[in-house]
Image 1 (cartoon, rainbow, N blue to C red):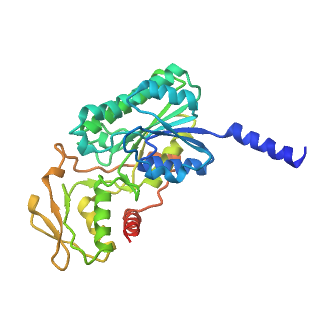
Image 2 (cartoon, rainbow, N blue to C red; image 1 turned 135 degrees about the horizontal axis):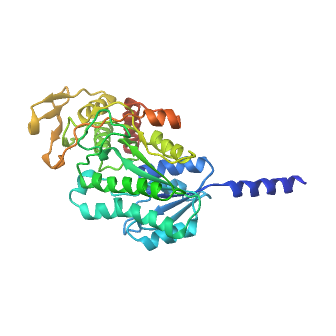
Image 3 (spheres, one colour; image 1 turned 135 degrees about the vertical axis):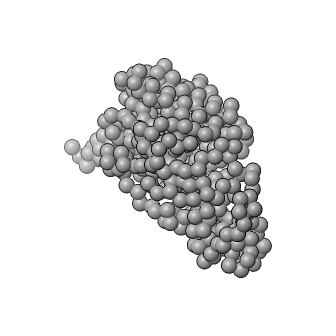
Length: 358
């Protein structure tokens, strides 16, 4: 066999073995990091992009010219759209990351939240059944908001659920739908990744973590400019925060198992929003001094400038005070490891926001 024939042979073998993944919510934080991981792992990635008048493609612009990245337009609220995309792409793996992901907004838009986060999953499951797609694995992006009013600390895969928002309720429907299909159809590979809070420089600015780092970065970049205080809600709400890069790797690891199961991805540490604020400001050399209490509490710099105030509009109607996950199962079975600490996460977000503004 000539060298040219050998090269062609290996290209053929590679293409025969190359995995194909369909990623919904590809323009979001997790979708972008997961796409990056999959492309580096030699996947062909089909990214589902929702049609809108102002499409948000900022997080996937770097993949547009990649030969193994192909965007598809589709909508989780339209089963015909879902059937068409799955039929056209014939994926080996589907990662359903698409969702209405703002917990606070879900109280204002409960019906549409349910249509996307709950029924959207059912539409994918039914599409897979109707198309009889063989050997296609399915990952559902679940959430620590399932635990809501926590019944046990730390929260494990066996902890009872008690969601406290329309977002959490819709995600719980999706969780049980995947579990039910897994039990009803023995050949179906479906797993739920119960991910605790995970952030990054790609996090949307409507999320409190990015709201904080961008505002603090803005102060650092424009020191001689007068800045309004950051308006926040419950400073004492505690969350288990990790980095999205670590968590998308965990998603992929779940899908490489021989048998499907559900896993918690978490850090096993909890920190308050107050701590997040303090660490973000310390990154730019400022200490925060708190004064007042309740809705009248404020955060001041050492020079006496007010930089944080409380806005009751940012409180949830039903608050979730404490979330703390136990990642033992993922660490043991998947050999999942985290590379970012809480301080590393904030440092990464702060450096990025300052860089964007300089």
